[in-house]
Image (tube, rainbow, N blue to C red; front, side, top):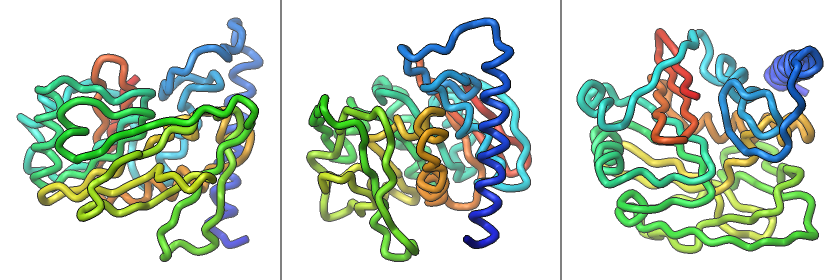
Length: 255
């Protein structure tokens, strides 16, 4: 185990302790029924652990909170070539928000979006379609990154993920496959658009607290987010979308 791996293990251990101590002293019961992807949600299907990993994935950055739409960001950040992160069950922005995000990426931004389904103008423009297989007997979902530059590429198994969502159709002329599931379905892709790129994942569930803590698959999270270039990272809150915003000098988290 190298020094970087040891560092990740120590960080994860500290976050796990914080989660369990927080839940132990919290007056409310653990909510196993609701998937929130909330950045400050310590329940099994919140994204508190991922949120606390961000300082290591994007080192030397501060974290704060803010709310903006892609439309608002387009008016202020169009030339800044930021990264944009969204984690939610579905990605279904309206036409105005889709147009604004496409404009931001076209000018050099990069968008990382993890959602089970992609709808609307964005999906049509990027020529992507999703589908799903449900296996109620299966208790784990295996995900693997297929970039040949990654050492020790292996399947990461995420518990209680019965829903297999994948890309059923992509533009093979432009799209690079970055990840698959254990049924060899495509789950993680890169789509260049103008001067920027879209990094799209059909499996947001690995980014929840339970799936990271239970199976210690924090390396998968780190590796997928590491595809983003070393520049500002902004998350956008559209209706119920959980967002993470980071800046070279400040980090913003929406919830």
